[in-house]
Length: 126
Picture 1 (cartoon, rainbow, N blue to C red):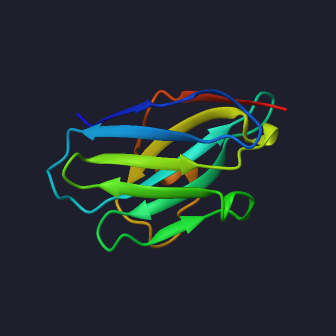
Picture 2 (picture 1 turned 90 degrees about the horizontal axis):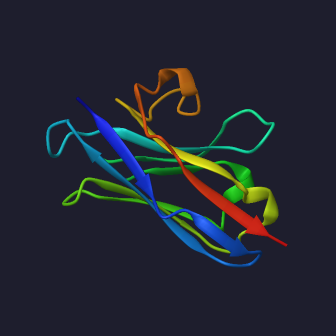
Picture 3 (picture 1 turned 90 degrees about the vertical axis):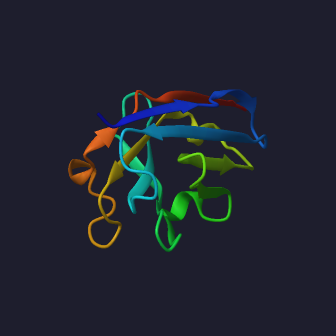
């Protein structure tokens, strides 16, 4: 059973930073996966944020977070990270990690992600 557990959320002021973590378990160590971060703000649809291929470490970002967010993956810990700097109030949302087999095509298509975590809340005040 694949499990994803997020942590690291919290409340910060605009301009601050946070690092989110997503501990993954239940699939073979060293498996190549696409792992992504998504977020959902109150009253809005869930949207993609970033993704990484755990094989070649290719990274992908949506325009709104480029230059501010960095996605990474630690193979030894099987843990996904999202380093967020220069946070803005519009970054306030519940952040979810998810995984699917490959980042190759349709990486922002949420329905193609097989497993999801429960989310961690990020609140940015102005």
